[in-house]
Amino acid sequence: MLSKTSTLVCVALGAMLSTARADTETPPGTDSPADYRLTLPRGRVLLDAFAEINLSDGAVFKPFSLSPDLWYGATDDLTVGLVHSVLGTTGLLGAVPGNGVGGDGLCLTGTDGNCESVYPRAGIEVRYQLTPKQFAWAVDGGLYFRDLDPVQLAIKLGVMGRWSSGKLAIELAPSVFLGVTNREPDLTNPGAPNQETVYLPTTALYTVAPKLAIALQLGFVLPIEKLGDTYAVSVSLGAHYDVNESVTVNLAFSLPTVATGLAAGGGFDTRLLTLGGTYAF
Image (cartoon, rainbow, N blue to C red; front, side, top):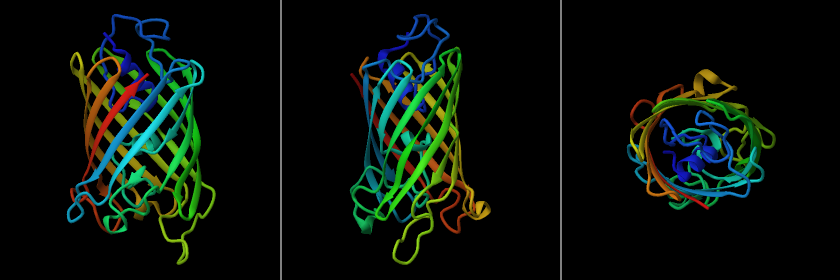
């Protein structure tokens, strides 16, 4: 059976750590057991909170951040969200520090702990359901502050797809961020460039127990400018557990630069741990 929480987790997060199982009961808001929605039912709210922990060599807990996301079902087909986390922003279970998505939400370790600021970035996102079938599709986009000091505003455009069969699900969430302001940092405006970047997360999920699923993700971060010098390939392994119909917990370990054009931090040197919790109401 598909619990209420796992349904809401999927629609709010793109199901990066959702339960992929065969359902004999029709999920709320769908037409048949094969249907699958990527938006919240009208009037429903979902709160996600993530602890994002750097475990890299010489920088353990630098940074450490708490990243809440809040999602609301405006209609059955339209969901809006206030987003801070790497997962909610890009669909990646782990992000590359310095690419505009590391040290998110409330960054608690200070500038000596690789925090750009206490509250470095945030975004407003809108998602619209296209089809709720076995191969479900939705479009999403929004306005993101990739940095608040200096202000680096970007526009996100993306799509989401989820195919499921039995205990297996495959999910795609490609997106592109288009830099609008402060595209080129300078001596008075330090930070990562606010230029066009493509994110390509692909996730396989498998249900191993009625309330437990595991996820394996391959992700690509592809800055359009100087692609060969700045690209990154990430690998993440995650687990998701439904505590009850309203609460879910999840865990992910990521190697965000298992392959990269960056001068430092490649291979296994950069490691990230993400602890998450979800409450649906």
